[in-house]
Length: 82
Image (cartoon, rainbow, N blue to C red; front, top):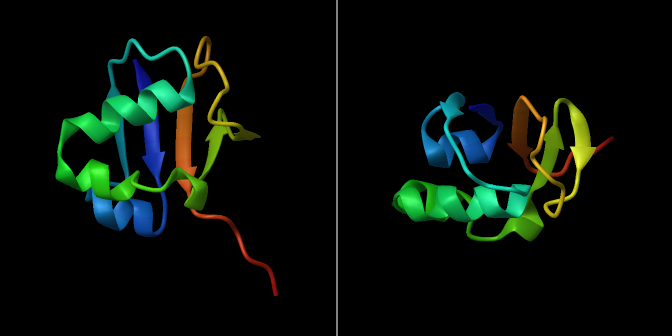
């Protein structure tokens, strides 16, 4: 089981701020594919992963990163400063 957190417009599209998921995904990209296949709202949220960033246990990561040992994955749009 892994906790999945959604922020900003990702949360708006998915409809929940967080959920606990039982997954067999080996990488973040595999998890994204599982989520996309769930239903349309996930497909919409993850349609363009180049517009997303991901963190594993609150550390920025790549979509190719392994999920092994991670307790939490968070998806969010890139931060802008100013």
